[in-house]
Length: 367
Image: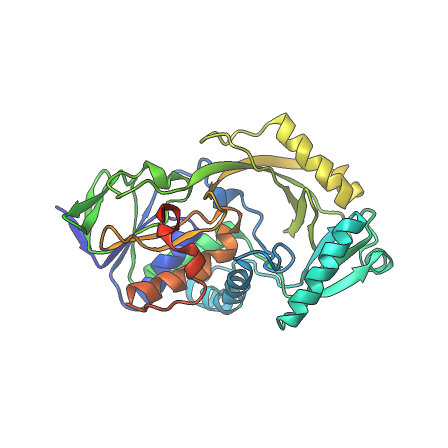
């Protein structure tokens, strides 16, 4: 027997879980469909950085949306801890972006000035100030400091969002959605091992979006492999988020999460010697002592990336009731919470949603 819901969310990662929670909170009868397979899922591999300012810049169309995403977690973290009993591990103690060459320093100083003009907290530290504050960081010519940037634990975030969605009445099942079902120009549900009925379907299936049939046109998302490693965090060193030109370091629970590669490798989440060498070379420039430390474990994930690097968020104009929350790439954790808010507003009928214009699905088929 086909089960009927007000909305179906396909994809149980942070974006899908956030969409399900937001829709359940406004009273919709929601079904969240998880793959039930953690192999290669990008969010499980993520470092959990919320580097909205240190990791982006004035030319980035996602800059303001990233800040909105980061601040959404400042609201969500205490609510989720109280309502789900899960602490998502949010810590908001800032992030530093290192310049190792004068050209990089010039760009970052310009970036600091621009961010300040926009009303955001941001500072420039010269080489001496960097050595004084972070004596264990490698040689630099200065750094951008974003004091409101943050990090969280991605797996705990998903656990908390799913638990809270269930508390609010959502149903969660494990299934692999093969197709969107339709009648004429209107969605009627999705088909996996079971058939599920709904007039609204949100595709948030990460790197696997294109494997779903019944969609009017291919979703412009492909898997990009990112390899990662965990090293021992140096004793006595305060936790920090450090970004460089070719690597990053995030402190998490006594470990240094370091990464990451960007590789076209299909759906292969394999860790390679070449990938790890690339990471450790980058990390050795950021923190030489860290790079010489013990390697605790290595892993890889598949990021869902679009041709222009921007997510696809909004309604499918050729099929009523079909919505996208896909292609978040390296920003999946950062933007998950705010994407859930945006989708809930769209499904409520709001026509003007802030930050949405650059993300519209039809942008790839304007010609």
